[in-house]
Image (cartoon, rainbow, N blue to C red; front, side):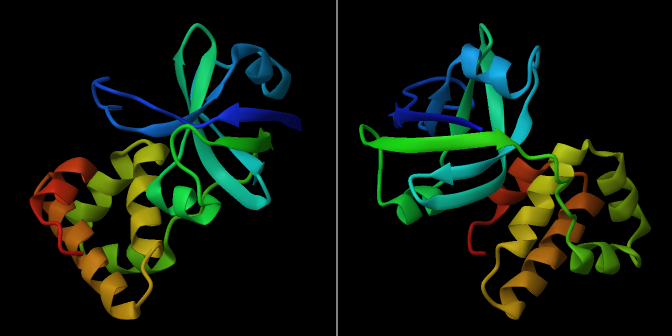
Amino acid sequence: MIKWTAEILQFGINGEKSGWTYIPIPAEFIEEIKPGMKKSFRVKGHLDHLPIKSLAILPIGGGDFILPLNSDLRKALKKRKGYTVAVEIEEDPDEVKISGDLMECMEEEPTAKERFQSMPKSYQNYYSKWVESCKTPQTKALRIARVISSLNRGLSFAEMLREKKDI
């Protein structure tokens, strides 16, 4: 387990990462957690006293990585760019579970299922986490329908989200 205090930063204009809020993870910490790793992997631990698990850290070059902080994490921490946070992380070997409800619904949609299963595991996780993050069964059902429709039409996750923003 690696422990340190980090400043929360935010990218300016930086391609697809423009505007992202994140915690930088220096190369020497990555070497302690997972020596020689140059690709994204998942971590667990704590940010301040907030438990985290199965969060992806992303390489940014030179051996350094970042831990992106989405709005839900920032709200739970009650922190934003410029604040400091106590970080305690280690590799999370647990595999992310794909939504059972999503997979069950795809059984009747062979085109969507085939496209979904041909995607890298990380892409499958985007869809699954989005479906499972719903607060009501109605919203979950709408999201499952939207995922299946989008997969049937060959849309990526990002294209699906941009297509309609009401869910």
